[in-house]
Length: 100
Image 1 (cartoon, helix red, strand yellow):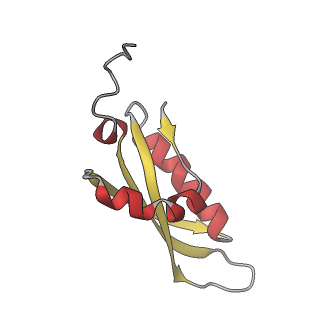
Image 2 (cartoon, rainbow, N blue to C red):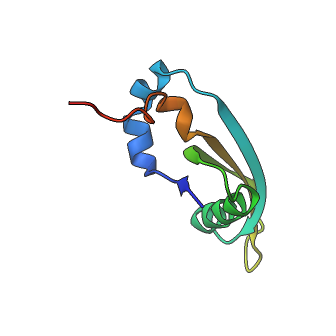
């Protein structure tokens, strides 16, 4: 499976460069029961890899929103939105070999 997830800090730093390129972005929304945001992101990425096992896609951005705060010893509910795109959208000439 070829899913390339990038560092979220890198996404924030390169947001201006990515806005210039035209890309087909798609969204996958998951409702996750987890103890904290990090666990919700991990579970959503595992589910995302399960839903799209053989696609050449790249995760562009991940947004996490707290739906219900259970408090105490109960888990919280999060809505995790994964924005992804095809690897081939930005590398349009990548299959042409380099000629010196």
